[in-house]
Image (cartoon, rainbow, N blue to C red; front, side, top):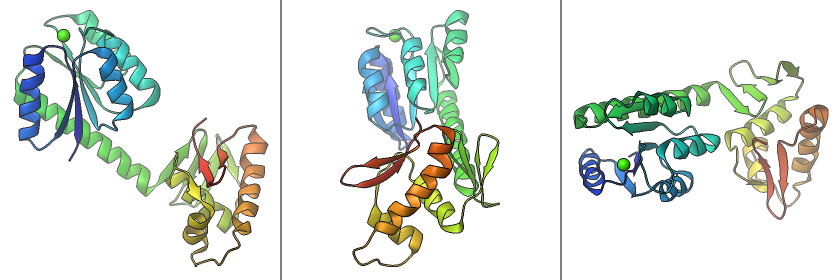
Amino acid sequence: MARILIIEDEAKIARFLELELKHEGYEVLIAGDGRVGLEKALKENVDLIILDIMLPGLSGIEVCRRVRQESNVPIIMLTAKDDVTDKVAGLDMGADDYMTKPFAIEELLARIRVALNRVRNMTREVNSDILQVGDLKLNLASRSAYYKDDELVLTKKEFELLECLMKNKNIALTREQLLNKVWDYEYFGDTNVVDVYIRYLRQKIDEKYGVQLISTVRGVGYIIKDQ
Ligand code: CA
């Protein structure tokens, strides 16, 4: 079930939302000021944020701006009645939606479902078809790879290794894991083949385009991440 973070300094509203959301089966985290809220938003791996605008510590607008620098998690802002400036600022900062206080809980619940479904659908598309890290894209349906608009010429194993790294984007994988996933058999001891193929990929991507997408994690293996 989805984890929802409520950033709201009015304890009564926060408590009310918590009860309603828990009743719907969501896991709920609460932060009573902007700074704590931002920290939880970035660290707690939440699926959606309900964000009040008028907050002590850090305004909701600022929290929204900083979360957006790192994450596409859906954000629904709570604004004071008729404050058009706040609504516009929130949406400009990348909020997905807003509710005006006082609001009907049913409407908020409906908007939460919509926001969560939108993310799920996006993830499904990504899973089925396109993987992307920075300007690097893999189309799994057509088995093609692109850096910006350049099509990369990759061998079958290079493609599969890259696919494995990109599916696990931002997660370090050991040579053994890569070997098992890509070469599809248990390997006894010698993982040099992984290093060799990583070198090929770096020549074709990192060195060619002057980027560092594929990194070595010392003592572990390899990771691909957005710069
Ligand atoms: Ca407030």
